[in-house]
Length: 182
Ligand code: IMP
Ligand code: MG
Image (cartoon, rainbow, N blue to C red; front, side, top):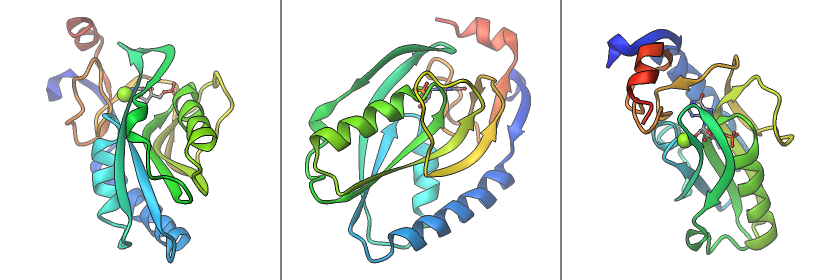
């Protein structure tokens, strides 16, 4: 798997250091509040697991499967499995996702929560914020790293469901992109 890497953008040490900072901020902001973390799957799986173990609060964790990407491009359509979004009435909700790119996913999920669940507050936390022209305007409340406009994998992020288990954020070689294109 490591031979498929063109370059590492963010290494394990940098991720660990930044997660500790974000966790401290979240802990300060949510102390004394009854809050629910909504993890968007599969991309945020590894991020949320490492992050929440650094947040010593009695939070609740729920997850939601959303998808918008096929291969290395956004399909533009965001699907939400709505059956999982009950019990948020009056609660503070923190949505965690892997990466903010076109903005469609978080815009859609935040909009859905605000309109349909009665959540008291809805905030967002992303590991990566890609420096691109958004399809819809969106800023996250907590951001790990700003990255350039490149397709990245690792630490939860996939290319056609592969490479999520890389321990760092990296760019793939073009032959790996062709090999797993379908
Ligand atoms: P958005 O809806 O375009 O903001 O994209 C959000 C979703 O697209 C993320 O949760 C990822 O699953 C996927 N995505 C966006 N950029 C990348 C990337 O560079 N690598 C892997 N997945 C990505
Ligand atoms: Mg994804």
